[in-house]
Length: 223
Image (cartoon, rainbow, N blue to C red):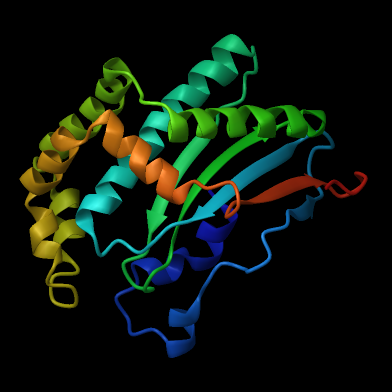
């Protein structure tokens, strides 16, 4: 679970009224790296890279960002595990708030050894640069999209889906549109390599990202 998710997620889906000052949550203007420390295993570390995005008021954008996260995760897993021989499991998340206006983030994270930070950051940067500047192939788009569509189609068979989908109708009437899963499926089916490149180029900019490194308490300061 991501650092920012731990801090802010209670407000993202809370049905109770929230204080006005929480609506002012923004990303820090200084995008320099953050170093946090833990008292666990000596060589256990965590890398997180964040980009500010937007809230989830635009169902098309939020769906496309979730699809982009799945695309990048597939590329990362293939490259990190298979080509680089690293056994760690990178994760990619798009979180766009339903409560806080204009607030959301796109995040890549992985656990790693402390001596791997520079190499893994370079690897992540290369993949994001490739996604921003080049069209993905149809096979990758299908491998990312099809499992999401299948999960959406199957979800109507479970009470948990309906409980989650209906709980916010009174406070957020727009939820009704999202309950109609065909809307999201249509957005996914209409997604193209070009549209994925466009949103990656728009949001995953090198000048807006910031990094979080979590290292062992006794380690030397990292930059």
